[in-house]
Image (tube, rainbow, N blue to C red; front, top):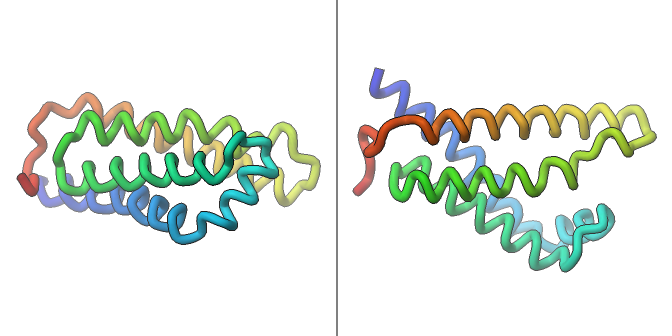
Length: 128
């Protein structure tokens, strides 16, 4: 069972780690999109959210500073979900469906973060 927990951490944290890498790698493109959604200082916002994703994902995978890592992920998900995936404001049916899917995905991920906060520390099989 411990291996399933470690695999789950790798999959869960890896999702956020890869998303953070994507934020940093595609900062110009993502900043343009964030700006189009009315995000103030979009380049800084993309950098900060990318950092939250990198710190959160790495912390979950490695099992270090777990509460801080999970709080980074929660802060990211809460701040981004309602602003960037506001499907109720989208008119195009395909874009609306995509935004609604991403909105619900982020809510599910936020629920998983909240559940992970309840797992007793220290987590099994950590790097440090």
